[in-house]
Every structure is written in C-alpha cells, then in structure tokens.
Image (cartoon, rainbow, N blue to C red; front, top):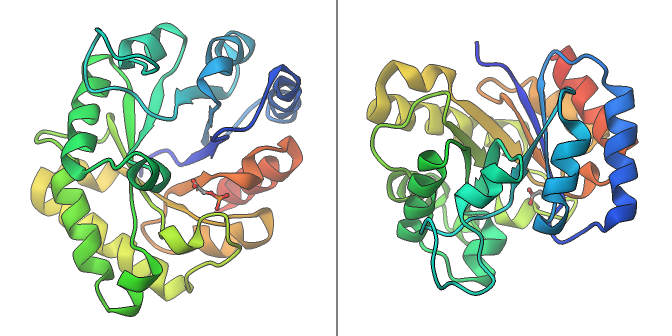
Length: 248
Ligand code: PGA
C-alpha cells in the first residue's frame, strides 16, 4: 500500500503572517501516519521549507517551467524549487490549464523537468461540468493522463490528482461512486501503461474536500489522499482532513 498523502495547495494565498498556520500544523502533527505536504506561493517556499525542515511536513511548488534555466521572465525552474526546499511540484492544475493555456504536452514537458530536478510530480486531471454532462468524463481523463505523463513513470515520482474542475472551490463534490469510477479508471490506465509500479502510485481526490466530507471520500477504493485548496489554509481545518486520512 502506498503511504497516503494529504497535500495542501495554498494557491495565490499567503504572506509572511500565514507561516503561523504552518507552525500550528507542525505543532499539531508531531508524528504522522501519512505524508503531509504544503505547496505555498513561491514567495514563501524557501521560508516555509526552512521552517518545517525535519518535521512531518514537506513542501512543494505549484508549477514549474519546462526548461532548467534561461530567459523566462517570471517563471521558476524545477531546480529552483528543489533548491528552495521543495520535494514536490503540482503540475497541470486546472487553474494553470485554464488561465495559462497549458496543454497536456506542456504539462508533460514540465513533468520531465520536475523529475530531472528530483521532485515528485503531482499531475492534475479533471473534467469540466459540461464534459461530465456530455458523458465524456473518462475519455477526458484518459486523454489528459496519456498526454500529460511521460513514459517510464514510477510510484516514487508520480502522484495523480483527480480534480473535477466544477468541484474546485465550489463546495460541489461528485458522488462517491463518481469519484470511485474515475479513480478505478485512472488506476487501470496507469497499470496498463506503467505496469505494477502503478499499484503504488498515489491517486488523490481534489475539489471541495473538507474535514466534514473527507472520511467518506477516503473510504472510496483507490483514493490515496487529497489535494486540498481552501481547507488547507487554516491549520485546524487541514488537520481535520489529515486525521480523517490517518483513520481511513
Ligand atoms: P478546493 O481546491 O479544495 O479549494 O476546492 C482544490 C484544488 O484546486 O486543489
């Protein structure tokens, strides 16, 4: 069984004051039976990494450039994230795909860059509401997985997050059978492409996860954790989700 992962994505939230939330979470989780990750805005990554070093909390970036260095104003290389203390990077989040026109090919290039820098890639996939209504969910997920993942992925380098676009930040959550259907499908796709290592790849659910709905989501087969936005910003809220994952 893969070690479960509770990943927090702070998105474009947080200045120095919010490091107190990480301090509080660290104090609340002196030991942990699951992996805990916070992906802060890049401006806080180095300080947060220093703060949590040696604790139960790991840190990650929210995006990286496909190139290792160069003339790319405003971008960050995976090596820079690693140098700032990150162990992970979120790639292909739907907000990146929508706001920055990232394609599956772009995401795949970024995954390669992340692996070259020694980072674990958290690759996000998910359908829009219109795609779900049109019965295209599994086709969309299959296409995104096929296009966003390079060959040769292994369980220690890849985490996949299923994040229905319509569930992100909306309070709407798919039914448990809907989550299960997609996660079973993703496991099967990954097994077909990468072989047995895919049994140990962590598959996260993301989209309006809260401490109040976490336990039932974590009981769904092939859900190995969560990628949490809003509810990761407050230590007490995120701790509730971590507790639910530990109990699952
Ligand atoms: P949310 O965001 O938990 O605020 O819905 C999830 C995500 O985008 O990762």
